[in-house]
Length: 466
Ligand code: URP
Ligand code: ZN
Ligand code: ZN
Image (cartoon, rainbow, N blue to C red; front, side):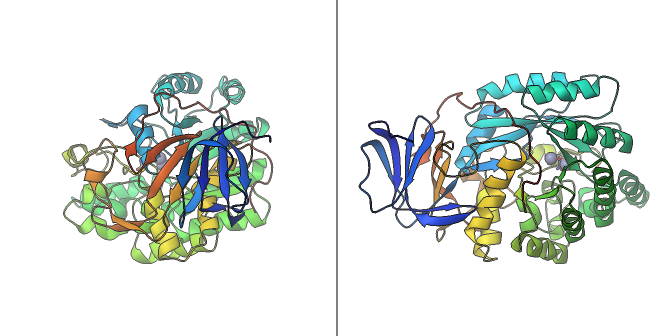
C-alpha cells in the first residue's frame, strides 16, 4: 500500500502482538486504516501525530462478541445506551461491540434488527448485531435470508427463559439449518430449562429463591446437558454453532470433542467466569453477582481457566448488562424476578488479562486471539481483530507490567458498581485508537461523536479456527 503524505498517525517503539505472532514495529495509520507495519529501524514516515509506545504492547482493538446494550430483559431496563456503552467499551480497549436484537413479544426478528440498527447510529465505536429467533414459523427462513443480506449472519437462540425468549429444540434445528444455508452461525445460550425450573421449584419450596441460592438453581449439569443436545442437533444438520458464556470444563470439552469430529463448534467464556466464583453469593451483596449461568465453584473456575490456558476457549465475551445496585437489590429475594447479568464491557480486557496472562502465563498472542481475532472471524467482521496493512486501525497500547486498582469511580459504565471493586488488575489500556482516531490517551477520552459504523457481517466460511 503506498503511503499518503503525511500519515495521520504513527505508533512507534512498541511490540505489535497479533494472534499469529509478535514483532517490534511501527504502525503507520491513514484514513482509518493500517497503512503499514514497518521495521522499527526505518525512519518514521512524515506524520501528523505520533504515539510513543516504547516498552508497551500494541494489540488489536477488542471485539466484544456479546454485549447487551440498553435492553429490557424481563422487568428491568438496562441503564446504558449506545453512547455510554460504546464510550465505556473504548475506555476498556474494545473498539467493536456486537449487540443483540432481541424481539419484543409480537415483534419479528427482522423488525428487531432494523430497530437496533437505528439505535446503533449513535455509537462511538463500530458495532455489529446478532439477530434472535424465539419461535420458528413460515416466515422465519425468509427473514434469516433478509437479515443475511443486511449483514446480520449470527442469530441468538436461548434454550432457557420460558415465556420470554426460549426456543424449543425444533426451532433450534430449523434456525441452525437456515443459518448454514446463509453463511451464518447460531449463538446459543445453552442451559436445560426443565432442570432449572425444577431446581427453582425446589429452592422456592425451601424458601431459598433468593440471590444467595442462585447457583443452586442453575446447576452445571443443566449447562452440560443443553450443550450436548444442541451439539447433536448441529452435527445432525451439519451446521456451525457457537456457545455463548460457557462456564464448565465439561461443556468446553464437549465442544472440543465435537470439533475433533469435524463439527464447527466454538466456545465463548466471559471474564467473570474466569475471575469470580460462587463465594460471591455468600457475601454482603449476592445480588450484584447474579448472572446466568451463575458463577461456579472455585474448582470449576480453575478447570475452566485451565481449558482457556491451553487454547480450548475461542473467545471472550463480556455479556455486559448494565444494571445498578438499586435494580439488582429491589427483588433480590427472587432470582426469577431480579435482573441477571453483570456490567463488564469496560473491564473485559483487564480482568481477563490479569487472570490469563499475568497470573496464568498465557502468551499474549493467545490472549489477542480470544480478545479480538477469533471474535472478528466468527462474526464475519473482516478488517477487525488484526494489525496488518489494510485492516481497520483499531489499536490498544498497554503496559503489561502496570497495574491499577479497579474502582467504580474510575469506570464509565452507567452503573454504580463493579464486581471487581478493589481488585488489582493489569492490562488497562493507556492509548486506544479506533478507526485511526485516538479516543483514549493520557489526557482522557476524546469523544469522536457518532462515528461508529454498523458493520455488515461477511459470510462466515467453513473451518475458521483450529
Ligand atoms: O445473566 C445474563 N447473562 N443475562 C443476560 C442475558 C443472557 O442470558 O445472556
Ligand atoms: Zn445468555
Ligand atoms: Zn448475554
